[in-house]
Length: 128
Image (cartoon, rainbow, N blue to C red):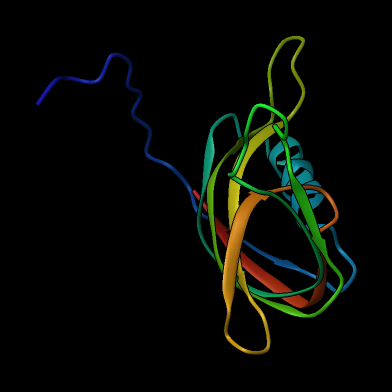
């Protein structure tokens, strides 16, 4: 197995969050990254529900690079994974997050998290 080209080690700290109805999932996470000065964080877990969701699909093609699907119905958050940070000199906060949700029939779908994912009841997250 090849060694990693770049690695960093830290003792880490866990941050537990609870978002409230109407909060925007992505915007809230970016705000927390700035407030807590998280230079490099990862989502450990996330459970909750959404009233609306906007996802960028992974089916990019030459004529359709960024298909976005928006949903205006209650969805259960089944997974949120990825990284985020507060940014640094000349760069604002950033994230690369993938969201999976399920509808009332249990059908699951997912994509890149975009702004516009509004919390329905709560979203409970742990960051490290």
